[in-house]
Amino acid sequence: MTSYDSARKNPRWTSWEVSSAWLGTADRSTTFRADPDLPSSLAQAASSDYSKSGYQQGHLCPSADRTSSDAVNEATFVFTNVVPQTAASNIGSWKSLETEERALVAAGDHVFVIAGPLYAADATEHTIGAGVAVPTSMFKVVVALHGDHPAAGDVTTSTRVIAVDIPNTNAVSGNYRNYRTTLGDLEKRTGFHLLSDVAPGVHEALTTAIDTL
Image 1 (cartoon, rainbow, N blue to C red):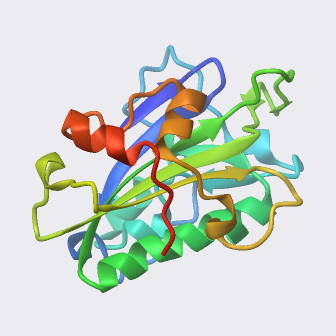
Image 2 (cartoon, one colour):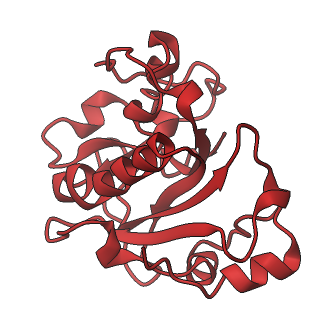
């Protein structure tokens, strides 16, 4: 599921789940394309916007989370799932959390994720190409549950929730643990009510917790 910002030509957020059912042996697609499900009246980025920009086409829902078939893998290569990311972020700190998500699934968890770009409120937005906005950082929330079909009601105050705010800079380094934050801080930064289906009391407790594993 995705919310899209046509003014910035970036997704606002993308949410998805990862379980063994989504993982397989499909090859990684190689071609990014416009999202055919988006109305043609809404502007999208193009690969030419990224050419010689110094930024990579960074997935929100990663290709490696969708390897059960070629079709589902190709579905991650649309510009409603892509933002400009530095290599240091995209294949460094950001990727380390993507790897952790799949490690949790390999250990038997069913993982729910929401991720998106953040923009500094006090800075003029940098753009590449024909007006594709460059995020100043990236947020992600990972919820690890158990069972084949877990639901919001299964989230408790002891559920593992990983929240990060990873800078989108060339200087970012180390794994995601260097950039852990609280759910509450991300709600303030984004203006989103994250994990909105979770019981209010549980949600309130989780907003101040920082993952320590």
